[in-house]
Length: 115
Image 1 (cartoon, rainbow, N blue to C red):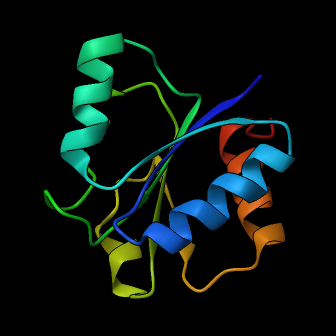
Image 2: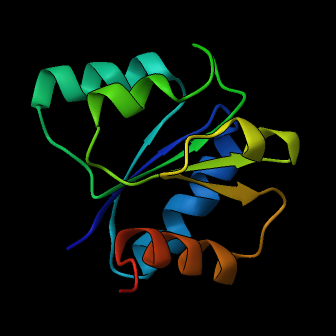
């Protein structure tokens, strides 16, 4: 079962994404800050298969997670297209607002890269 960590300070968005991804059969853990995600990793040492994080969350841009999860695919969500230019090549960008079908495609395309 694929595990997705979703990090966003918008409780309604977290709930909606968790419900949608759980419906797909994925295990989903949600966090409202970077600190909460870092703490969960430190306490459990469990690694997600993919991290989906909002760019504007408490604790700063989510790129600090790239060091912790260097081999875990990461997707950054933002409504600001300029953010995409700031991301390393291996980090995907998901434009807000998005349709659920698009989030599925981006996650699957990030985890199961063609070729």
